[in-house]
Image (cartoon, rainbow, N blue to C red; front, side):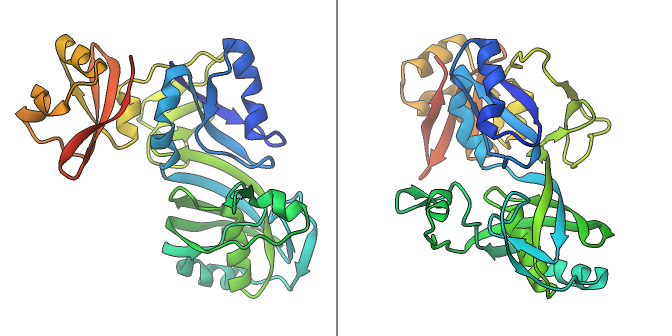
Length: 300
């Protein structure tokens, strides 16, 4: 049971990136917590064995990216692997900068047709490759920060801090359209997930998209040896951590009602989901629903 911070290289799928880890650990119980497109690179958080139960908490974390937009041409996949479907004049730097504010905050975004989203039980990209036109419905996402890092026509580099579910390919398309042009994403690097940051040969714990100075640095595993799921990892997911006794740990493992736990009666936990630890080992994550504590996951 553990976590691996993987620096995925461009040119391989997220699934293929796990192959060496599975071989090294001699287990198939390995999974990533958020796909990166084949052309993209950067931080891929990988969970192993029982820690896979934590996948939902990682999947909903905010993320940070650095992307390069190519203006003037839009591809059907919105990335460099697709066919050009539209062309338009290049915008000026001023035009691009002028439209960025309309893509910050909560916005409605239409996902790419070439995506893994399910449409009537089928993947959207499967329908698109079969020549069908999947109906992609706009959905709310949040862009916390969007900046233009550099301008070198026809390319623009942007940095993005966004909620889960945001497609940077769609963002590139929409920025180009708003600026009176067309565009697609040619490079993408995921630099951070929640408080975990990709740095120069290391993964740091911090809030920025670059190496987190003065923060704890987590070395990349060589070979692929999982790091423990400790309190530091859990707190970066926005969960509170509480310590319980040996008797309470056994109580939880047997699925007994949670209302009798002394740590829950002693003080009001600051969040609606908390992680319970005994001797530095994660025992369970519990959640409060309708004013009642319920089990999320239990590690036996």
